[in-house]
Image (cartoon, rainbow, N blue to C red; front, top):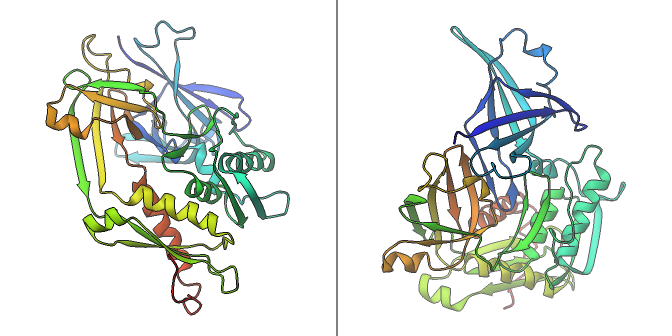
Length: 387
């Protein structure tokens, strides 16, 4: 059965404007600890009159749905696969060709555009709160403070962790606050904003979501193992110089024995005052980064071309888990676990999925944060650290 694409446009209030029947797109990516990435849509419009169309306006919402053999038995026969807002558009001419290129972004990106606050208060303290409750509080404030917010959550989508922490968020964006909360959470917890604008914060599922069979659902696999991302020790400093100062090294002896000591600095600008909370951040960091970086990429083909081959690729979401079957015994050792899908690069006929580890992006983001605060002052760094 042929896969059909339906692209509809709504204004910022959610009011329907029109369906784009002159649009085409190639694909988009979506990943845990984020959401739906950029999607580029090309419209067959003339260069000189694109401005006459109310549908091509910044901040309009664009929803992309599909119908295919897998939706044929559903009640409405449509499956929403992408929802984002128009972040920019570009009319163009190339010889005899004309058009408008529209860039869409997922709504999770708006979490980086404002400061986490309560009215005019931008310093918010959490004391002995569950990490999941902290997360809910951030999204609750985003909803309350945003004039045109789209995001929502339930207690089922943002879960509690049974781990408590104390932290003061000072002049952070909502996204930065979420990243801090993620660093306080136990290993294997992740967050995600899906195409329905639903905010999710959960641990890695124990139940297998997908089973992929070699030769039927996929035939292309790439495995990359690297030492470059290993961080088996973390040196934490809360930037204080008084009695609440914390300057402590956290490490994993087994990883150090195997790969040598590879230290990462965590400089906490918000000045964690309790050692237990420094422990949460640093121990989770070392736990997620002490082992070699193993990146597995698998190309899953769509099942609309052949009844006996392929998979319902629209059913694959970041945060799902999967197993792989059909390999020889040696390869099965690499794929034996219930593995977390961290990223999906989607096109209409295939999905390239990336399988664990989540730690790949954690190190990169922490390094970016540290670059911003390393210049605060090194004159006040205490000696020696504790262990």
